[in-house]
Length: 201
Image (cartoon, rainbow, N blue to C red; front, top):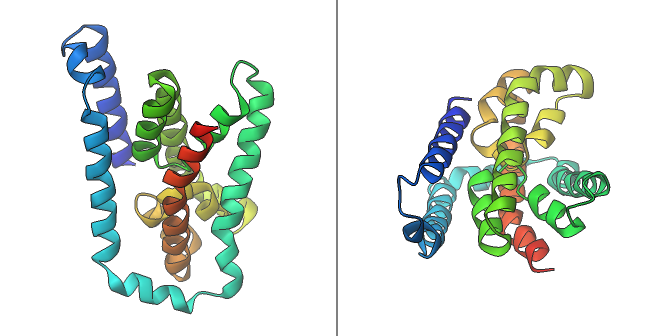
């Protein structure tokens, strides 16, 4: 929760800097800063995955049926995004699918979408994916009570291997740690491919 509030604070700070021209716009818009930030982010993700080989080994102990959980999360999110496109008629189907394909990974997806589609849709992606993480953090106990132990894992999307893992562990149980990490890893890995695909269509 604290990490989400920090991200929101930086977003608000950036918005205020843009409104009041604190930072020259040509430094931000006409440069490759976001591309470099994206490269550094992907490098950090690779380090975090490669730094813990035990996590990768533990994936072998998963129930084979649980391997379908991240697939169903991806398909369910894309289906929901397609339904939203019917309501938001001023947005195309591919725009809605690109935003949904962030799966809560706001830092990566918003940079990709900004690069491909512009700052407006990138901002929408940032807010939509931050909201997904915050809702998971807040509603995890209710999701477990109403829909079962796998519900907060699916709701958390790509965040279940890091920021939402503690709340999922507390509400669903310690036995779902490996499932949650596996789910987050697979969904996380799909983000750059799916976001790029839908932004290119």
